Image (cartoon, rainbow, N blue to C red; front, side, top):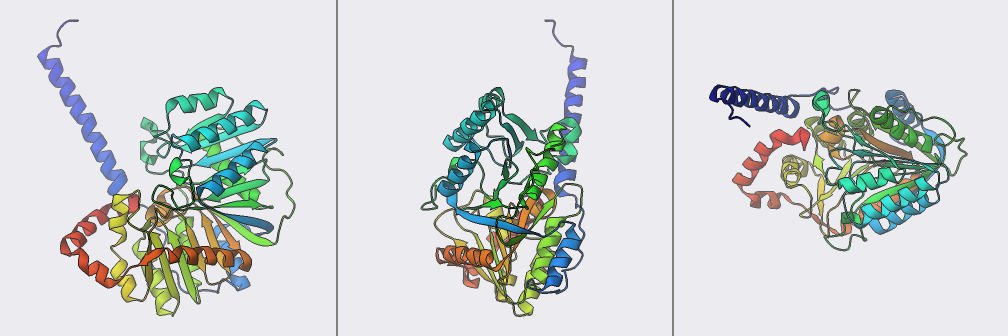
Length: 430
């Protein structure tokens, strides 16, 4: 091969530098420029969650019905969650649809792959949608083995030149639907970190829910929406949307957020907080609220509402989130908000409870990424028995948590607070 002339080498270097410069400009535009916000101020107080008007408001504002006749079984931690999900997949007769943000390598990943392949080879329609960013650690040979075994597997929004402007918009939904009749949602991903029962730092603490009843069709809708984007296929027919009879007495509503549409998850959370009369309980691994959410909590305290935050503590998977999370703590503590950090392991459970009558569970964290950037899906449950169960779970977790004080913040020193403030510039994208 002849030697490249000096002039051509210089031109190539300039071209490569230009491409690198364009990438840096693109990254800055995507990561740092402001994005669309609907709310300019906190939502004013409205009808209590126990009032029929609150239901009408929630159904009308977000365009999704509140459906009766459902049940939701609370599953705590990986051993119980994975067993229930895998058992349901093994029992599938017509279809399995599975959307997840995280699918890592390891024993749990292999168990899910083997079970999904077995059902596909038995003639069941198995469709799996994994977020491209969340699935980056997944080995290529595992993906190929699943596809060779009959699993229809797609990666959601892989990096392509024509999709760079949407690269920051991921699907964070966790939805598994069996035969269109049994649904699962919550916080767990497919990874060995969730194995066990939250007994030590290697066993993450999380909650998932097994759902039956007519609302399962709405969980299927959340999957079908993103599956159509990823594959071009529109899911129809009784294998995916069978007739569903009532299975219980709980009223439920699915709220999903989609890239490019209104920030429904943010609006829904703020509307619920504005309805609080006595107590707000929030469990989240990533507490990175925007100013509107902070003010919404402060206004609830000003109305006399008790506010309890249960957050991830020293055991976390995000150095940045733990530090940026602390920025609003002093104002919240001074207003009387109780902040606790879960001690035994990484707390990954996501839960919002308002008073004694309403809870929201699913994939959304209490952070700007869930509020505005990710595709999320949450089940709102209007049922006192279910809410009582979630309060019990929340309070049990609080027993294993450490209460944060203003003295704790004082001990951090000015340098730590200054560093956290600078890191806060990345807040919307953590």
